[in-house]
Image (tube, rainbow, N blue to C red; front, side, top):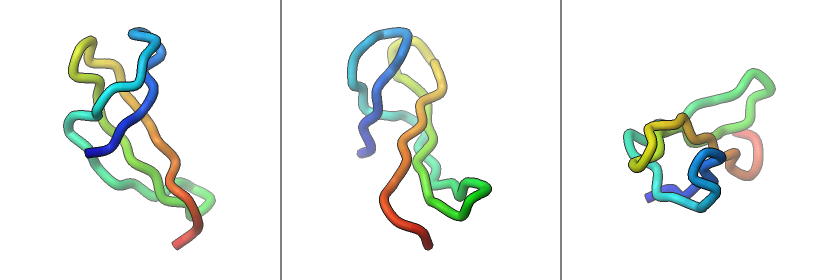
Length: 49
């Protein structure tokens, strides 16, 4: 599973409902939600596709 920092919880959390997305500049990222508070989490992955 993907892990990202939750700003509301102020801790690293495992993302729920993870999707791989492509940003406008062509980089790939993981987007999901925090299982505790429901906040949207975002993690940028390395390298361009």
